[in-house]
Image (cartoon, rainbow, N blue to C red):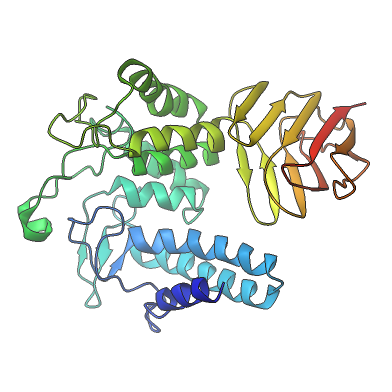
Length: 339
């Protein structure tokens, strides 16, 4: 934890005390793009990082430190919406703003989707961003294209335009998180995940990048890890909604009414009437399960040893969310049954 805190403190040191935004030396995820000073990509990601690190501080018993990190994240959100939102188009965040208030804007899909996924964008702005992204002719050839406007040689370090006209899996991941946030299952299923699953099944090995038309770039790295990794994460965290944190375990499916997920040491059997969970971890977690029967009563049993404790029962909310506390580990099997 001390090393992680030092890393976060380095990033906090990049926050300009007057602008209250991260002052960035370069692009976040697309290293050849020239993006500098107050950029939307790094600042949106910083919000997500601070929220997650605040959870780690809570886990370590440092609630004061967690509150400070969340307060800084809140300030960045406010400043992004005040200084980086394109008030003319009113449907996306700018690429960057300089200290002299000069702006650059390529309608970046990566930074805007990160902003939706990390809740930087309020609901109306999030909806406007997704409309703009979805209007792009290359957006979902395969998930997800880099930007609406082209980064030419003068816009890239050393004139390297190799990533200027392609789709990237890392952007597709934030696209997936963004769609789940707004409930756009059709786009997630039909344009983001399913086409890539079909490619993976057909070809086994996927290239590093895709063209605008949805074909693989044959001049890019063969058998690259990124797209298969993205598919795996999107399946587990978005479609099946299995998210394990330091303080909580969430199961919130995006589409499936029932499933059996058994991959590695992550085991979840899910339906509205019964959920059986066996996942790695250590100690008590807040367990949150969505999609259950509204206002129904559930009994909870945990087997596997004396350390496998859990609340005896709980009642789902009117929206079908059940919340209880249970010990989580590979030794403990949690059985949640309606009735």
